[in-house]
Length: 329
Ligand SMILES: NC(=O)c1ccc[n+]([C@@H]2O[C@H](COP(=O)([O-])OP(=O)(O)OC[C@H]3O[C@@H](n4cnc5c(N)ncnc54)[C@H](OP(=O)(O)O)[C@@H]3O)[C@@H](O)[C@H]2O)c1
Image (cartoon, rainbow, N blue to C red; front, side, top):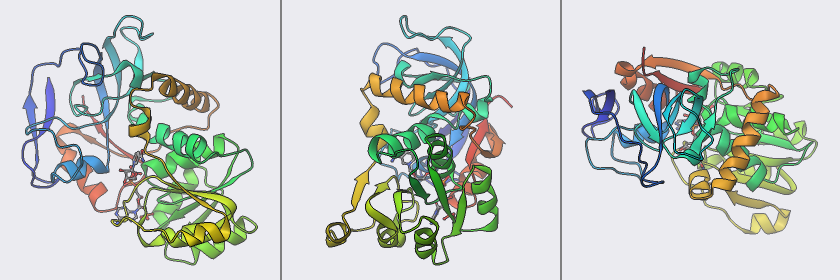
């Protein structure tokens, strides 16, 4: 099979090489001795792969290795009892190995892909939309009618959070840094859009009539204190990531004074080894697909041998929605 490997830790432009490799066995490290073998049509690209080209991500396989977490494709074979049939269209999270014509995913992270979505949208689905649902509903305790503020709202997690929040009956305020990103946030269904370089905290308080219920924060950095200040009493900041570069620190007296919460949402760590939770989240996300709320926004697509362009787009803060590799183009 044709695959893309990280062969050295020299950054997005030079670390990746096309290779001809044997097809993998139907065996995934998370489900030893079994796995769903998938003919990959599209593979999602995300920030961790950029970090992996520099050896800066927490998961550091031996070189060379095939990166790639999220895929959209067709089942070649599936373990008995998995409910997945040969030839089924699926969205899957394979954790690694997705930048290849054939990949293997654990059955509990492989989900039927609606005919409403193409393979590129399938490759945008599991990590971002499952994280969004997990962060909003399971960790943020979102209730119908809540107001949700989303940072990095034109990004992969951001657009997913806007759509999922809307589908769960919330009103959304998107925070973005440019006109182009404002357009994407509106396309993702944001009710209101504010700019990260403006007085967004005051605007959010005004737009929400005194404070928002939930902040979804994949950015972190120096805007964190204003996120806390933008909450109403009982509101929650849900910590999802740190694309802003620095990990914020919280003065806990703020939480006491305003009766607010900071909640961590680490999807991967939580769902691994909990098939029931994955089933519940997968069903909820697919329901939102069927209802028309979830339609992943694919911001740019590249053929496999132009993956460096995809990684550099993300690295340069130029990505919107999900960036996808067309593996069989
Ligand atoms: N907790 C979990 O379980 C989980 C799951 C999936 C992903 N994540 C994490 O969530 C984060 C977001 O992932 P993503 O796929 O949504 O990324 P993305 O598509 O690249 O979007 C990230 C957004 O962050 C904003 N940003 C602010 N400062 C930035 C900077 N210095 N460099 C780059 N972006 C900056 C950008 O929006 P503006 O330009 O509009 O500010 C950008 O749109 C990542 O850290 C990822 O690892 C966490």
